[in-house]
Length: 391
Image 1 (cartoon, rainbow, N blue to C red):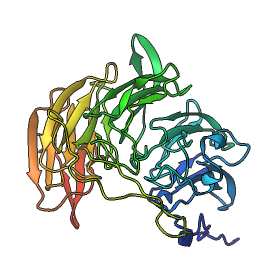
Image 2: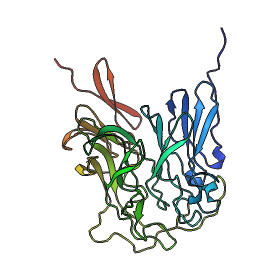
Image 3: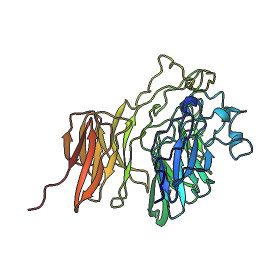
Image 4: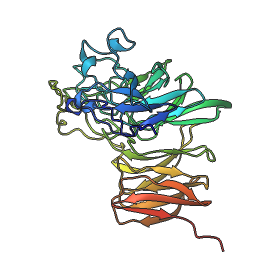
């Protein structure tokens, strides 16, 4: 019998240059897609495709375009070489269009914009549709141009086929760290709607092409911005959202809050952080009527962007997400150790349990012999819950 090597190893990037892998790969047909990060180190992000049988790299797509590539002119001088723009989280694949949708994070340097110029800095803070067979970009949409807040756009994208304004559409739903909930047509990348899901004061609307209109004084500068909402942690972050085809609602955990964004120049040194953040100027805070820091769980109607219900929680986090089920229940994890079950249509509290550990995970569901379970990791324990068996 011919022996096979089941221990193939392929190095994706050099960690000493600031690169890292922060998410699971995505298998699409005969390819393994891997996103690489390094935005805090000025390491130019990219997405790789590898042959799953041999480990050979088939293509590489850079999230910061080089010379003579579309978007390179949105970077000042040679700043594209240190442009960061990491691929923090795993993308989503749509077999109906044969496209993968991958979100891109912060430009480099993260806060100091003087190095990269007052330009859009593509494809940072964007979602990009890529042909997995060729690695070619089909379209992109940039949520935050010339980002000086470290808002990224690494949050999950949810692919939904549904009626939207009376027409069946292939949609991409995305709640961004910049505080806005987006509905895109995923066949073309056209912006259909964008509405705040937390308080924000940096965006004054959109032009006819869907480009955001930035409020003057809201971006980072050496003098410091005014008190900008949301915070660097964003309105939401790595917390997985969920969508219910039964209710037609999008669910997420969120965080309210604001801060100032002050920059300073920073030299580039390979393998060292490339941030350019300065201490905030004293005495700058929220205006009267602007919200204090808080957290909660919200249901959003993609048709209008309206908040359908809002459940406050004691502590927000970067990681705890929600799970919507076909039983019209939303399960949620709260950092204070509570697992919640909420009515998916109204947000009404149905049940909770205190695990006794600081939760940093999201609920998941699975079935065994026709019986459904909900599980979550809490501390070093995995809890699984199910309904009592019918007698």
